[in-house]
Structures are given as C-alpha cells and as structure tokens.
Image (cartoon, rainbow, N blue to C red):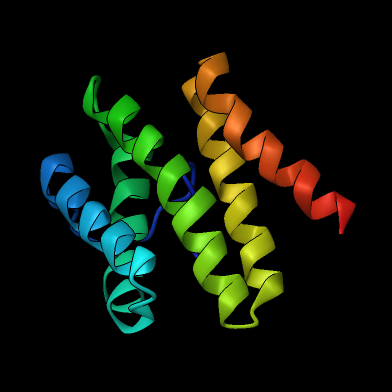
Length: 122
C-alpha cells in the first residue's frame, strides 16, 4: 500500500486494458479463494493503476481510477481481511475512497463509503 492515486510508485505502467484483464483474473481468483493468485496479481496492478491515475490523460485516467476503486475497495480489502491484515485492509479501503473522490462521480463514490461505514460499525 505504498502507492496512492496521487503518489504513485516509480514503475512502468502497462496499458489500462492489460491491467483490467489482470484485475479480472484477480477478482476471479478471489471468488475461488485462490489467494496465492490474488497476491501475485493485485499489488502490481494497484501500483500501475496509481501511475495512470496520477499521470495519465483522459480517458485512461478515469478508467484507472474506476479500476482502483474495485481493486482496493473490494478485492484488496477482502483479501487483506482474510489474511488477518485488518490494518492494511483499512488503508486499502481508504485508497479506494481516494480514487473515487478523484473521479468525482457520485456513483463511484458510493461503494467505498458503504465499506467505510461497515468498517466503522465493527
């Protein structure tokens, strides 16, 4: 969780379409409880999406932000909570909210807020 949508890692970022495909694979693996695959794919995808979110031109930037909401909000928090890393799951949820806020679309701001309220209720 060293990267954020406004402070990316200094890494080469593959095209957003490639990252979307890897995120889809990670999500499929998560649904099968294949955490090894999720852990192999998700950190790199998140880091590269942060590069696009911080430095990309539209429409790639907006697409990267949407994918970050999904990657950090659902896949990241679920995986990290399962592994007992609740502190990192919280940070992942915050990254999802940050991406949604940067996107500026109220539709995309809702899911991270729901997760935030769920975390607060625990």
